Amino acid sequence: MTVTPSTGSQYARILSVGGYRGSRVVDNDEMCTIIDSTPEWIEQRTGILERRWATEEETPLFMAVAAARKAIDRAGLSPSQIDAVICSTVSHFQQSPSLAVYVADELGLSAGPAAFDISAACAGYCYGIGIAESLVRSGAATNVLVIGVETLSRMVNFEDRSTAFLFSDGAGATVIGPSDEPALGPIIWGSDGSQAFTIQIEDWSKVTDPEQRLPLISMDGRTVFRWATTYIADKTRQAIEAAGITTDDLNVFIPHQANNRITDSMLRHLKLPENVVVSRDIRHMGNSSAASIPLAMEALLESGEAATGQTALIIGFGAGLVFAGQVVVLP
Image (tube, rainbow, N blue to C red; front, side):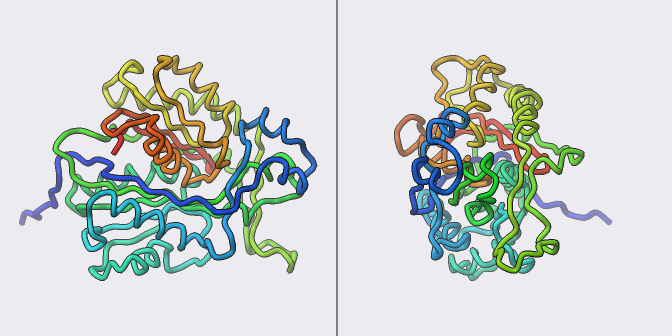
């Protein structure tokens, strides 16, 4: 007996991108009324001038749906044409069902798409793109909604002056669909669980303070910085090579918005041409983890700094330690 395999599109591409940023703007002056630091020190060490925090009403579900609606509309699709939803988040504190299920319901996807969450921290968006491409090319789905959404400000430890100013809230969404030509390079991804302790959200079951609403983030910043500027910098080059192009073919570089000094180090390592547009969305957004790359992509396209059809390298890296990246054609 022969089992008939599923078949789909030969290629897949990013059809659109949409974002939503927490509405509260918190600049470094305000941040320094909360933690013991100075605006100049924060900017010098990270490049951050301000970050966006969500209000109580701006839940992960609210922001994810807002970003998704923009992406679906920009793709020229109706919600009924979405047949899979992937949410990357560490901010959905209900063990089950997934945030993706709630998003699908809020969007009115009555056809009942496949819906699931992934937990890959700051690499989660790129993980989602890799999974979505496989779904489209295998025929398991036609149009896949990939969302990165976080409300990390609610998990900030304000007693930790080395990390409290970093994190922000927002959602970025893209639709991945069929393509007549190659538009997504091979994903380069992996993990190093031996360094899992370097970035963690504490085990909720071990929190003993009854006044604490949510588990808090901790990070060994020096270890993460060394890892990102050496090992991950090498992985960015691998992603370019895997796509069969050179740095001269790149138009745009959109790294995870973790720290401008990490971005600068990657640029030195890659030796990118001066004409390559580099995202610095962290300056006004902070680190929104899984949402950072799609939000940065949307900002570049909306400002005109980047354009549809250009070739971009995206790379995410974070808690796990995990990483993922690929070369993409911008929507």
